[in-house]
Length: 500
Image (cartoon, rainbow, N blue to C red; front, side, top):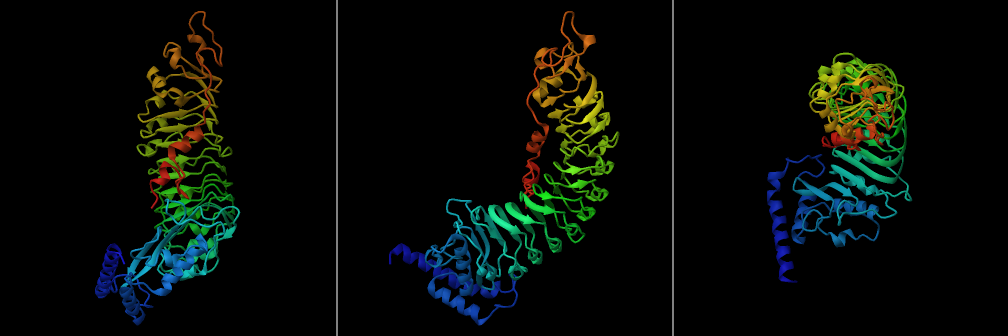
């Protein structure tokens, strides 16, 4: 034996003996179910570990860990040979351990190509029953583990064995993870984070998930085979710790459950890119802490409810591409959202009526999209004085009259200001030079210079209409997914900043 190896063995042996000595101090400080507390088996495991120079660990737990990982990474993986001391001097990348009553237990398993030496799933990866024998497991995460040519279902049984410990369960980007979300996940009483993002799950969201009273993050996103209604059980006063709900990019149907208004602690709600119908329930107005409400790309109706203006914590309100939403913009009350609301995306929402001048009270607004509606009347000059505005889209409406913005506004905004496709809209040629004229807008006829043309399109100073999509810009500005996401969840620069 080389001196270096002998030295490592002596250090490991000394560490193991120290753990045995300290066991009395540590006893009772970890979570314990009484099955191994101060038991002869624990003492025997500690003594055997000391003699072998490994961290004290139950042999059953060690064997269950090897078997569980082998099921995912393949039978050629020799866990006992490569990692004889998985919680000690030969740790496995992606596996963490916690100490309970003098013994080490696997507490976290993360599988997927995150780092160069991370555990990666074999083409025929499968769930091993021994996974559920890791009774101290707190975190279980799979990333890009199940390819499309290896359809695999989430196990329906066994989760109850982890109900007292498992806090985080994540499946991300697994095209082969197919089938239904097991109702048995609702028995994970300690679960705080459930993330099922970009898999191939089908069926509906189980109502049993409403029993997860400790849940803080629920991200079920990007499963295009997932259908059916949003269970009313997801919204109840037992979920007072829930901060993020991201159910985006599925094929969910039905209306928004009024029970969602009971999630009083909620910060982020992303239900975008589904097939949801009906009106926005008044109960959502009770979500006084909500900073993100994303309902884009659905089939909602009933207009923009006035109670939303009372949700003063909102930073991002995204309702675009609900063409049947309809209604008018509230004439007053926008000052209630002043300072916080940064993104307001109401494009392609079937809106009618005028743009209220009171919207100029949104002092924190950075992004405003009202394009592709049926808005009429003039554009309030006060909108140009929004102190934080960085993008404004008014194109594709029936707005009329002369734009009364100062030349500096056009120079500062450039192509981030869009007002084309408003046949009755024009600009004052004396107020802005041709280089900064609003694209696609004609010169007001009564203000034309002698001999000047008054045509539209590319003449009259309007120039060509640039290719731009306000909805796409809004998606980028809020960074939802993120959201995030799952999530989301994650949802956007917005959702990703809140992931726990």
